[in-house]
Amino acid sequence: MAENFMITLKIDGVQISVPEGTTILKAAKDNGILIPTLCDLEGLTPYGGCRLCLVEVTGSPKLFTACTTPANPGMDVTTNSERLKNYRKIAVQMLMSERVHMCAVCVANDHCELQALANQLGVNHVAFERHFTREPIDSSHDFLVIDRNRCILCTRCVRVCDKIEGVHTLDLKKRSKNTEVIMDLDEAWGDSCSCTGCRKCAKVCPVGAIYIEGEAMSQTKNPDVAEFITARRNRK
Amino acid sequence: MSAAINTSVSSNNRARIATVWLSGCAGCHMSFLDQDEKIVDLAKKIQVVYGPLVDAKEFPENVEVTLVEGSVANEEQLEVLKDIREKTRVLIAFGDCAVTGNVTALRNSWENSDKEVLERAYKSPEDLQAAVPNMVPKLLIKTRPLHEIVKVDFYIPGCPPSADLINYVLTELLAGKIPNMEGKAKYG
Image (cartoon, rainbow over the protein chains, first blue to last red):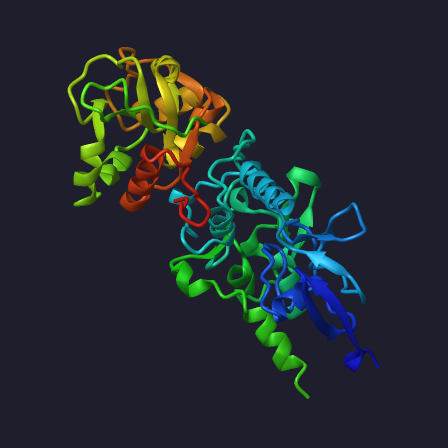
C-alpha cells in the first residue's frame, strides 16, 4: 500500500506531494530544491553523519537531518535560512579542520565535494585551529590507495562496499576523531583477501582519501554508480 | 570590517595599497599582475606604497588595504605581520597559504616540525657538507595562517586566487562595498 499512498508537505513554502516514506531530502530534490550533502548518496543507506543537510521544521526547536527524516503530512520545512547557512558553514569548517585538507596539493583538487561545498557556501577561512594528522598512506594494494589524512569519515566507501559490492571489506575502527577506515581485520589493503578490487569505494569517495594509482580523478569519480546499480537490480 | 576605504590621506586621491610576501611562492602576486587591461583601471584608483613590486624599504603608516600573501612560518614574519596590522585599515589574507597555511603548513604534521623540516632539507645523508643554516630567521614550530596571529578583515582563498577575483574584491572595497564571496572564491 505504501508505494502509492501520497502525502503532502510544504518545503520552502512550496506544496509538495510525495509517496509516504520518502525522506525530506529526496522530496526536496525531486522537486528541484537542492539541500547540500556530503555523506548521503542515492543507492546507499542514509547515514546522517555530515550534518550538512540539516533543515528546520516549523514547530520543533531542534534541527533534522533531511537525509534520514521521513516526510510527514503537513510538515513545514525550511531548507535554507540564515541560521542553517551558518550551521552548514560551521560543519564544513569542522570537517576541514579535523585532518589535513590542503586543496592545492590534493589529488582530488577540482574533483572534491568538500572543496566545492566550501566554495559554494563562501567558507572563506577555517575559524578553528587545524589538526595536522600524520597517518601513513596505505598503497599496498595493486592500484587502490587510501590516504586517511584526507578522510572525512562519511562512510560512503564502507556502505558501497557492503551494500552494492556485497563484500564489506571496509569498515571503521576506533571512535570520534580517531576513527579510521580499515580493510578486513585492520590489515594492509594489499593483504585483504575479501577486496575484489571493484573500485567503487574510489568512485564514491567525495574527497581525495581513496584514489586509483595512475588514474586521473576525472576518470575515477563517479558517485552515481551506487544509484545506477541499485536501479538496475530493482528492475523486474 | 570597515569597508569604506579612506582615500583622503593619500596626496593624489588614490587609495594607499600595500602587498606583502610572507611564506608563499609569489604566485598570488603573479596573479595580481595577471589582471590584464583591468589593472589599468585599478591603477588609476590605487597607489602601491609597499611590497615586492615597489621599492619602499619600510612599511609605511596609514595604509588602507594590505594584501598579505603567504603564511607565518618564522619569527621575523611574526613581527612583520603584527607591525602591518597596526598600520593597516583593511588586512586581507591573500591566497591559500595566508588563509589555510597550504603547502607551507604541511610540515605541521610533524611534532617538532621546525627541526624536522630543516634536517630533511639540509642534512640528507647524500649531502656531504650537511649543515643547517643559522643566518636566517628561526622557524616557528608550526606554520600558521594569518588569522591565528592577528585580526584578518577579509579572506581571498585560492592557489592562486584568480586575477578576476582579486580585481573584483579590490574594486568592491574601493567602492566602499563588502565583496560577496559565495560561489566566487575557490580553494586550491
